[in-house]
Image (cartoon, rainbow, N blue to C red; front, side, top):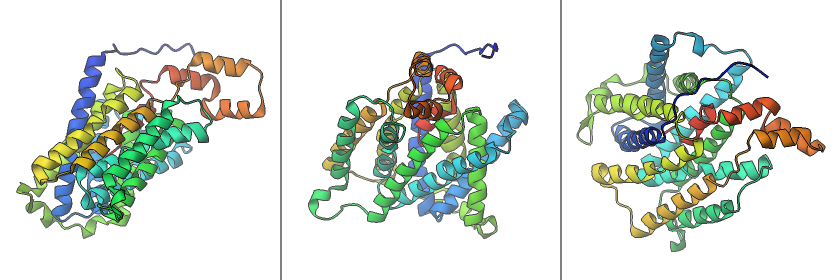
Length: 358
């Protein structure tokens, strides 16, 4: 066991809550800003590329100025994981989210994406065979009822665009994959350098799909919804991406990941409110009630996971072992290192993955 002492910052829960709410607010307004940019001429892949490139360059400059190049170093073994992490969570998920909100009200598009924690809880139960609380099943039931109410499927046909629904649900599934990747495969990097790497991968992938030399720069001189496109782009990159990610990263020093995820649900309400005021998007009573039920279900599912502590790992290592238990101990916790990671739960990259990277 290493003798290195970990110096932890002073834990201030109130400050952590303030950071998460501030991040949720800027993320929420970003949904409306993104839709205005799409209406102004961006397509979803192009907007994803533009956002990722701007965020990557901004975070890269921030890291180099404040920490130097050392945090960005990566071993050959890390690079494939970082590429998958960036492609799934920072390119495919946002692109599908942009497709969803281009065809659905912003609040509903975000609701679909926020079902990801429910998929994670199912993976924890059936993929990793870990214990979960019984309220998981109640939460999943509420999610299904909420989704049915939001889509109003009882009317005999969907009241919402089918491709938008498919894009939203696919983004949720991929976001769940991103959560699992963040907590199980990329556990050796600090969240800031991890985010920078992920945006860099997304920017490169986007440049392949939507080459920069085909970008219409004159589009930035136009307006959308009465707002200059260049100003909307600045918000997208700085206040809609970089600032909230930094807030979420720092909030993990003061709050556990599950709390951050639950508090971040305020983004759904705020996004719907911003879209109502700025875009005139109205939801009917059934959709509002269904959205509330869906959020309640996701919160129950998110909080149904049982946190495994160091004592659990000690019992698992010292007790009688069957082959299944041995595989479970190695795959889900990683022995002593897993216990240490759980003990550092507030600063692991896993915390970043409790909030959708939208």
